[in-house]
Amino acid sequence: MKKMNTNPVVRQLKTRLRELAYLASARALLHWDQETYMPKKGVGKRAETIAYLTGLLHEKFLAKDFEELLLRSKAELEEGRLGEMDAAIVRETFREFEIEQKLPLGFVKELARVTSGAQSAWVEAREKSDFSAFRPHLERVVALKQKEANYLGYPNSPYDALLDLYEPGATTAEISVILQDVKKFLVPFIEKIVSSGVSVDPKMITGRFPRRKQERFIRFVLERLGFDFDAGRMDVSAHPFSIGFHPYDTRITTRFDERNLISALFGAIHEAGHALYEQGLPMENFGTPLGESVSLGIHESQSRMWENMVGRCISFWTYFYPRLQKEFPKPFAGIPLQNFYSIVNAVRPSFIRVEADEVTYNLHIILRFEIEKEIIEGTIEVKDLPEVWNAKFKDYFGLTVSKDSDGVLQDVHWSQGSIGYFPTYTLGNLYAAQFYAAARRNILSLDKEISLGEFGLLREWLRKNIHIHGKLYRAKDLVKEATGEPLTAKYFTDYLMKKYEAIYGLK
Ligand code: ZN
Image 1 (cartoon, rainbow, N blue to C red):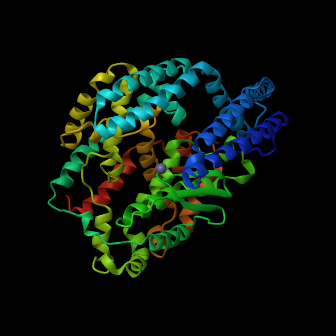
Image 2 (cartoon, rainbow, N blue to C red):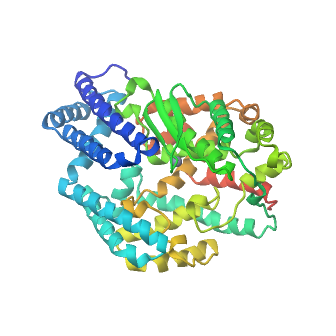
Image 3 (cartoon, helix red, strand yellow):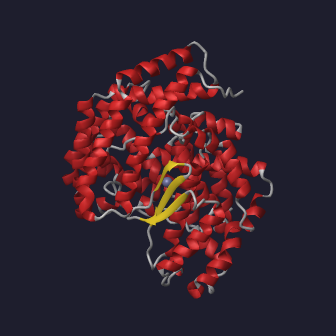
């Protein structure tokens, strides 16, 4: 049962949290501007401005009177005087406060300095495919992340502490089991696809796709999906992203390539999936944890569901394909719907994660998870990384990595100190499949709706079962609440099996 009337101490806390949120959203807007419209020469001063605001936020969050208010709120919680919603606000705020408090300022500054150096070293090392140039930087990053885990504390593995920063409440042991299940399914499944003899060639889609026309088509799709352009925008940036200041101002970016319509299109649907989550958060809880997304994994579940489960299903294109054909008769007039559907779902093992299809993608993630876990636990050394990577890659994908830029050097994450982040991508896929299966059980006409370009029922289901709660539940509990059972890999592997057995004529 939800108790709506706010406890007086928590009411004060909420006022203070909203003040922090105003500052944070101003800072976020500066970030958005930097990635989209800011003139090149403004970068230096902008970085100073953002750093100042970050310092101010930190100061306000750790101020003595804020701490006292938070401790009083926590006492209310422990004495059982809080309703479910107030309790979640206090629990989540205290969690964040503890993290900030456990990390000494000197350490935070050193990590920022070292990762900033590591990132520029990584860019250069990747260009030259030279791991040895990156190695000393990565060694420093890893040492600091191990130190960070020690500051934060952990039950079993130091990796627990880092994972918890991105997916609160998830443990290394639990997700290892689930990811192993996914791996056991994927390795033989991909082999079956590769040896099916069916070859689907994405290169069939060639042509020139003028930017203006691409944008028009994408806007049409996003409007149908329910992205509210009166409460959001779409702009262009080098790396697509989404950012929500609050539910009434949530923005996405995309990038256009006049030779490749498909990447802008699915990229935009992905970001719109993130944005629909942000637009679905309850405005009345702005600034408090109840107005925020649950975790990276849950956020990713929304983008991947819209991009892959909805955006790459046949019903979706039954509705949108005639319009696509009309907008771009060359080449689509000559490609039947069924072929187009196969092409956008082509599976092929490849070296680069960000270019991977939805099946092989997760194997890329599992490989990274296994490696970064051992690095943090100290059972693999940084110097051995290329060798370990390439051996695993051969084992899982059957491919031989010939240069580190196609292997261990391809991702920016480790140079940024984002260790523990990768699993959230695959968790996102698993959550997505489990949510989607539950939505289907509730909306029996879902496929029919989608084939008519109607997404309202799905959106409402997601809003009611996921978005509206903010951080009321941790990811683990949210999955149980929304689907009736704990997270399992079963829904995802079933989904892949059903879809790809048909496309590749397996069985
Ligand atoms: Zn995403």
